[in-house]
Length: 257
Image 1 (cartoon, rainbow, N blue to C red):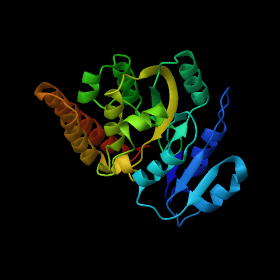
Image 2 (tube, rainbow, N blue to C red):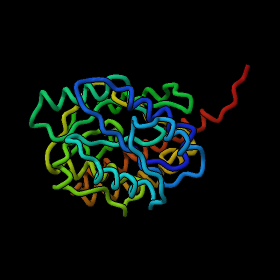
Image 3 (spheres, rainbow, N blue to C red):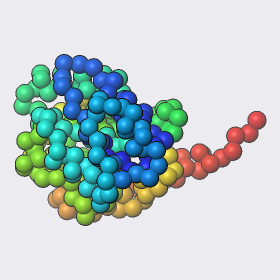
């Protein structure tokens, strides 16, 4: 499912990236729009009966996602935000992993980072996350948030065990959810590029990464990280902020030539 609000610039690309998926699975795709005032509704209408959508005022992104999670009827669930993309064959990899691993309750994979024009950027960050993901442990997850939200899928039965997203965590709610899922069982890691995360200055993550890192530190403590893990989490957050600030400066340097 996809939560949306005033994302006409990107949502068409997001939807097409989902609807173009092919494989041995049935796709139920829901879009919950918060009553957009731009051209989003016209774009949604243009897809006809290829997706199900609703457009009405809600209480923000988390509320829209939770509505979608409650409305979804499939056995395997995930969400992708209205400015991100699923990459070709993503759902085929997801479906095959669940089919060949019947005990798998949730999984995640690799994620590219793209700009407004779908060009891949920040490849070093993607490579670092892949390096950590191949060495998963809950202990490591408590000290480093390396799971990319748009690559995560889980069996519906887990919702009965861990509930829905927590609206009291406005930015790091996905990290909170991964920690809750990981308290039940570890994920399977799919070493394939499943999705693309769009980074730009006015995106929710791009504009608020400092606050998000602070939330993650608090969540690590809430979910049982000891002093050593909290120190590593704090240091990891500081390193992320240094990297992001440096990349922000580079992106604002005018081209000479």
